[in-house]
Image (cartoon, rainbow, N blue to C red):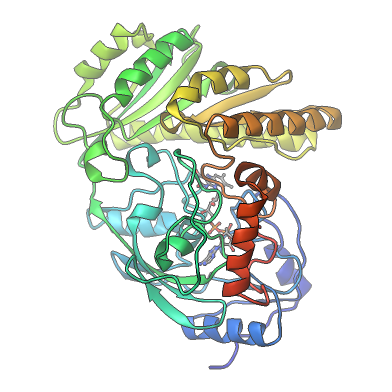
Length: 462
Ligand SMILES: Cc1cc2nc3c(=O)[nH]c(=O)nc-3n(C[C@H](O)[C@H](O)[C@H](O)COP(=O)(O)OP(=O)(O)OC[C@H]3O[C@@H](n4cnc5c(N)ncnc54)[C@H](O)[C@@H]3O)c2cc1C
């Protein structure tokens, strides 16, 4: 098999040299293989000539993971065929994949906010999460099998019965939602999921699917105090089932939402005009799947018990109304990005998750930023994004220091430095702080064994 064209035109290359973190890279060339055999030919050629290869998909990463530091870029954009509802090429847009299968009445739960911009393969490579992760877990449990080109150029189809060809250093992940470090499994599928383009190029993905939920009720609910919020959250979590299984999101009794999305007071101020003016301390967007009549009475009764501002609740029980609520949720990061772009500094935002017992402490710490900031995100998983809004380079420096202090505290409380965005090139120090140098060295040994010339994803993760 011959190599695909090597593009070296700077005018084309420049569109591939950064990601959503705005970090900039350099590359000597770009290849855009159209089939697995071409991917394998590229990897064999690069291995033979010790050319570093960075896999790039849609570059929505926030960690610099697909940003090349020299060598070749391998784009998955031409691998975009939907073969069957549960079988698609890795380069297909995740949102497009989901729309196509939803038209068939089928459901693939992972829903990163970027799903209309990121690829299916990118979501697998980063084990992406989203709001629905509260009920359905991250991408991992919804992947049945992948086809991948390994660093030696061999093509494998891996499922959970395929042993890793390399010795895998096992370790104990934090017992929270996490996307930091290699997954501690000896099967090749789980090792590739979340490996951020360092152990293989994923070319094709087979998924687990569910029937599309019949109805989804959304409630945008306001809480007057933190105590009221945390009291209600405790009641909701009491009926949480095993994450990653269909039963949990499908409400039949109790309070079983599929997502619990938090907005602090500062976030509400930022989106003032889109939500009712209230004296609320915070708000939460719940989504509840159901089969027949919306379980509204049960929810209102429970919210009242905890003193929520029920009369201000926005209820959305059809697609159009729910889309309006999603627009509010999505407006928030967009506002944050605009403010940051205006002040000309780089974004400093947390992606930590902590155990249930540590949520209240982290919320208090997130309140105390000493500069403008907003906090929002996946409350159900104790996974909040605190976004600092520094106005000057000096404040940016303070935000970075504060971020590292918060990371240390999250780890000390049993949490993770990255719950969904991954490590990439920008959070290696945070990962090392979390797991310790011996673990990093064990992963380096894994990488040397899989890829002696370290051509794939050089500088990513470790
Ligand atoms: C506005 C915004 C919102 C976001 N929201 C979320 C969110 O809610 N949840 C979340 O988890 N993330 C989120 N992200 C981060 C990002 O969208 C995800 O990590 C996404 O999965 C990356 O997919 P991509 O196709 O853009 O991959 P890229 O950014 O191109 O690549 C990411 C990494 O995956 C590797 N990679 C990509 N494709 C393959 C492949 N086929 N084989 C092997 N390696 C591969 C790359 O080498 C790189 O290391 C968000 C980003 C933005 C900008």
